Image (cartoon, rainbow, N blue to C red; front, side, top):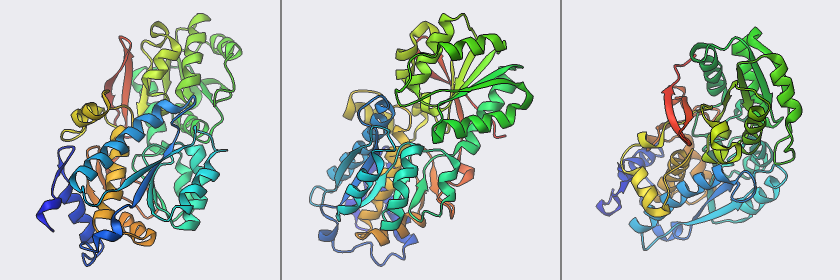
Length: 386
């Protein structure tokens, strides 16, 4: 490996990432003609505008940092980032996927960010052989579709759902729990896993509409109040979760709200109001940003002027896996797919190695509980594996 490619990547040596990838692929192509790699592209696929944009912006900024660092280290052979704004809608996903597929210089995708849009876009990526690493789509069934190009850089809801249920049961010690979901692929799936853990403690459930289609949740608030629940689990995203929490509080419901990673964003507090949001528990198969390895948090803050948010670090790592493949000379989609499939290396959020179905090695999955405290989302505790 030529010395000039060694650099610090969020405090982690990129040379280690590239070397591990080259070793997995046989090493003969690591010094492939750099001209073939110059102008290669990777894309971020997720919501950058609309009601679901906060999480997508977190992730896109992680990708931007990775590409920025790569291009500074390789000024004569830069990589371009493409932004594919899905607005979080499955309806937008197929046309965006086709746009990516039609761009012959595009070698890999970070995303899709959400499970619903993944279900719509991933079959097209698989048929085209375009590798995609999601930093946040957690519905378990995504790994069961035989999509050869699918990889997931975080744990799925089979880890997060039981962990959320265990927190409600063992930490909150709630004997009556009301479960609400937004009917999305993500929200309904996560809620189902929570129900399995809580069993007879679930005293009622309700379904609402997501994607900004519903703003009045007074009917749900009335049902929760009548149930006598001391905890409410919500499967869905922050925009509805905030309104539900606000309207529960207005209805006199003081039950602790628990929700998954789709709600784990400061935008939830803005939507609910600080007073109503206080004490809410938010789970995530992601570590706190301040536990990211090396200088990631500082580098992110320097580039973007804000601290990293939920999944900024996993998106950064996913982008760097693709960039390591480009540096190792993987300039065709087929070669990039094999590179990712065989990948093993350290990132700032985790150690990455994928199963045959594209899941992150289960040994690397951690689920954390976060708490809204003093108007901020702060780490509470790592939840033991169920």
